[in-house]
Length: 162
Image 1: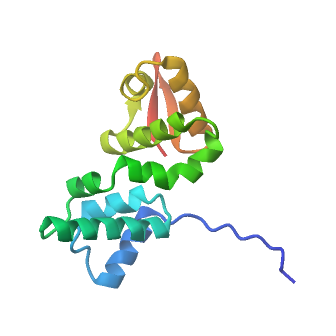
Image 2 (image 1 turned 180 degrees about the vertical axis):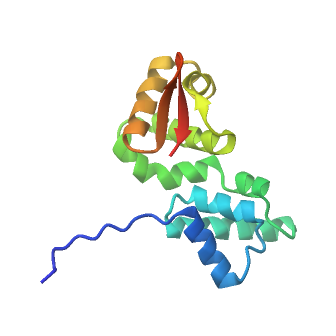
């Protein structure tokens, strides 16, 4: 009868989210294409977050008196605190008792998105204040859950966003 069938709803891709926005409104205006793509990436495929981040940017646009929302505006208006708050539940499964690791994970994901792949030693210095063991454990858990990918190159590992 199908009552107990389970359907897994996959997150939307950034491309799907931006195409949806453009289909509804005819273009990416008042966002630049890069800004709209950044919002789609920040939402991590969750449509409710996508709408929330668009609202935050539009509210900020009205207050600022600007005409268009750029990538820099999105990075300024969608704060780290907002991202941590929105990803709290997701990361609670990975780091149930370590709030600091949840915050560092969001910082790491944002850094990788902005700068691209980095070495594990660079990440250890920038995000984990040189604590190599802490970084290794945190990165290992994030890799196991599919948030990042690591690849050994020479003596160091390169960390990629998933």
